[in-house]
Image (cartoon, rainbow, N blue to C red; front, side, top):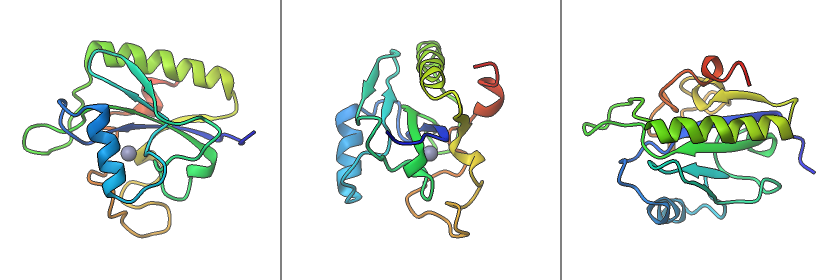
Length: 147
Ligand SMILES: [Zn+2]
C-alpha cells in the first residue's frame, strides 16, 4: 500500500462547463499516462474517480508518490482569473470525500496545491503545467482543519 502523506486539493483551472471527458483529453494532450487527479467533483456534486488510489496521479510535482489528488471543476472566471466558484453541491461533496479520505489515511495532511509551494513545484522551478498558482483558489488547510 502507498504511504499517503498528503490529500491535495485542486481546482481544474478550467471552465465550469468542462466535462470529465474534456479533462481526460487535456491530460492526454499533455502526454500524461495517468490523470492529474484521483477524484474530480462536477458542478452538481457528482464525484468521479479517475484513478485507483494505489496508483500515482499528476497533481503536485515532487509529491505525487505520497499524495491523493482531489479536484473540483472550475476555479477560474471568464477572464481566466483565479476565483473560488465552487457550487454548494461541490462544497458538500468535497467535504464528504475529504472526510472519507482522512479517515482512510489519518496521518495525511489535507492542503491545497498552493500550500506545497506557492509559485513552484517544490524544486524551485515554476511548473509549466500549472496554469494558476492560486490552486485551489481557497484556503483548504483552514476550511478542512476540522476533518
Ligand atoms: Zn492544482
